Amino acid sequence: MKNLFPYIGKEVTVTEDMCDFNGHMNVNHIKAVFEQGWEFTTKDFGFDEEYLESGFSSFTLEDNYRFKKEFLLGDKIFPAFRLFNVNAKLFHMIGALFDKDEVICAMYETVEGHIDMSERRMSPMDPTRLEKVFAIKKAHDAKGLIPYDVRLKIKDLEPNT
Image 1 (tube, rainbow, N blue to C red):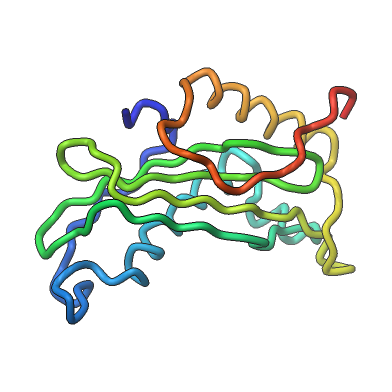
Image 2 (spheres, rainbow, N blue to C red; image 1 turned 135 degrees about the vertical axis):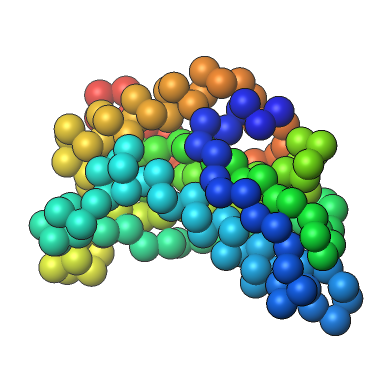
């Protein structure tokens, strides 16, 4: 199942300071594990320091989290991510947290807007970058269908875009 997610994050072990009064991993720490999914956008999308210095970035527009199984002290968590959809101004990424048996225990979705920082407004990605990101999406699509309901939606990329 993890093979459906091309980007594999860093393994995390639940520590005592990550657990809340219910004895399981607090949601804020789960969100932090999902944040590491952004590491691949720096390299593969080209959202690196040079790109940021050129005046562009991305802003989170919407997130969705779902939890199917709790993580307890000492549990190992295996995060994985993929690009689900993209258009000229938006990209939709999803992630999953797996347990040691490769069962999905938590799901994450985010929609990000491509931002022109001089105006602090969404703007289209340049055609070269958009083509690169769309190629990543197609490669991820080839991995297979996601085994859970994807709740966030963005408009599909227009054929001539």
